[in-house]
Length: 165
Image 1 (cartoon, rainbow, N blue to C red):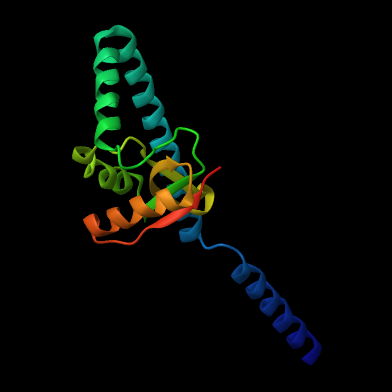
Image 2 (tube, rainbow, N blue to C red):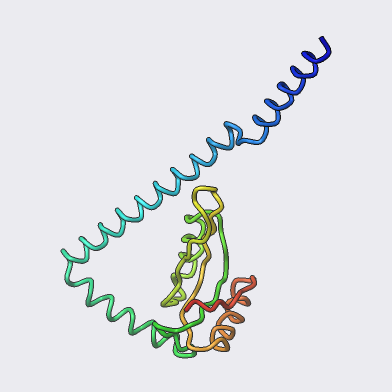
């Protein structure tokens, strides 16, 4: 009788340990929600890119205005040498939400930084995704640090110089 009780106790204990080691239903749902949110955002971004491409295709005048706007940006940012193939960028923020990161960039639209962008870091399947906000591509770390210091004063925040290439 004692043997049966002991064996039953071990079976119950083993079953409890096995079920406790796996994910809970809530964790599975949260992962699936994060995955579906990420997929939805990617689809929305693809649609927006396609619409922008079609709009640009159908409106040849917009390319002329883009060229003049980029010339204006070069003049306004003459103190810094933004390089298309530069190795450094200034990171000025990191957000869990892509919308917040893009909103942060939108606040700077009046400053006309030519290379403000977001970088997605992390694993979507685990819901551990960060959207880093970066500005520019610079030829040297010093140039990036100079802009970073100026931005830090303007936005009352820190910055980080990252080697991106």
